[in-house]
Length: 206
Image (cartoon, rainbow, N blue to C red):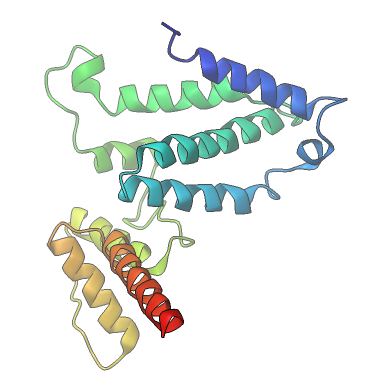
């Protein structure tokens, strides 16, 4: 049986060859910035594969997403202050262990919630610290509200005639019901797409 992780090392070697002299000219000229659009695209394609529970697509799309991580790490090796995939893996491993002290240390009780541990690690002073404004609007609204609730902040979200307030209220409603507003909307849109395609077929047959 192939050892888990061996294929990742092979991917790293392939990426190194593509990026090195004599490799692929396109790969060689990419930067962290030029790859952002691909990282975003592969992220959304991975989300679609996961939400539709498509096994083949999950393997393919998560592979494409893994490539982006490996690609960025390979570029990092060429920086003035170089870093690589091991640094990335070491960082997240340390983070996971620190956030699960009841599992990876001698203590018997968790040292606070995940959110509290994360805030302590990063020295955050606001519930909104670390919330990326580039998130899709519904996800941004729901995450911001969740952070405020986790911090025990007393807020009101009442729908008004303003469309933005109404959308915010829907995001808050989704949070109160334990739903992911973005995922629910994407599910509804997939239904809309099926309906559109069905109508298109009927229209062509007429």
